[in-house]
Image (cartoon, rainbow, N blue to C red; front, side, top):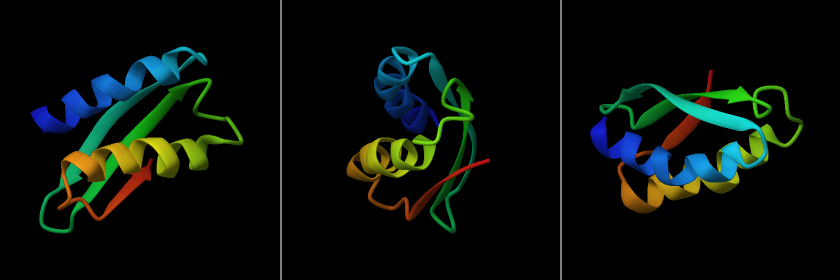
Length: 73
């Protein structure tokens, strides 16, 4: 979980620049599923799914290839 939080800390400034943020909710290591909560402006943004897959998931998978999916809850 520490490594995931460090990855999210790298992503966070991009989200905060647009009035949003992100919080790690859970990581199921056996299934390779990370759950995050988009906060602030990101929570209701129509581009949230793109942000989740195009930015958050890519960055996490780049550093933790064992992660299969990132979901917003």
